Length: 323
Ligand SMILES: [Zn+2]
Image (cartoon, rainbow, N blue to C red; front, top):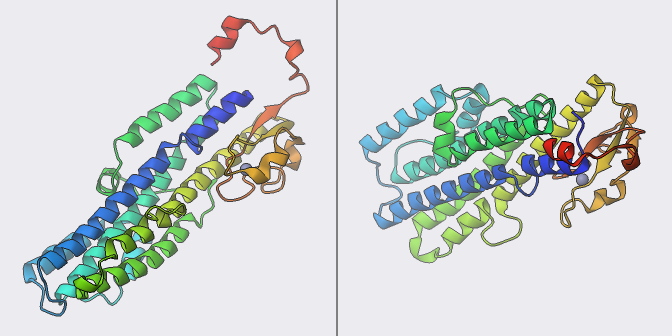
């Protein structure tokens, strides 16, 4: 399907740009997890529990049953993550149980993040290969409607009937990046939780420490949540642009125009490429074809020699019907 510049920008903004609902979902998943971690530690402190005292056997049994259930339904990749995350985590004392609960909160966030990334990319080929702009927009709107129903970690995990699979155009190391970042986040959050639980009076700032790690508190970096948002933007933008290049090949399109989304903060480096025309055969990602860098929000449109405004009648009704 041939798109105008404004149509291409509108699609890009809905899929990975400023109107991206998926970033809001990521943020909601991270805030949800942050509340869980804080309430786990709060409950421990509030109950005046001793870190080293033996934990309640019923609590241990319930936790293990729940974890086994999660593990049984997880993908092999997530099963490995669960094993890594719970490595050396005995379930004996109250302290062990707190660490296990916090670990479970963070692991479930990672699992939901992977499902979310899979769902976000799986429909992109349907958008790119849609025969008309209107149909492409329908695909996006339907997808958003489905996504709006699942905004927290539990909903995303329970509603997914299949293991998360990334669109084939996305770099395959996305999931291993999530695993790696999860292990780092986990180590930091466990440290803060342990310190807070062992000496509640000395660690008044622990909730701030937890939120700095998970959602960045009020800082511009947004902690791990900011990295997760950047990842979903990059994955969806990558899938869309790589799929579009294939679609150009399939229709024997000869030339494309580079389009930098007008965004003062993100794509300053790409401004120089905006509007430039290249041969499809010469397209090289990172050189003259997006993505140029992580979080790049650029896109491309088909360009033909007869794309001159003067050669068309511009029937207003037709133009409006084509929207
Ligand atoms: Zn860019």
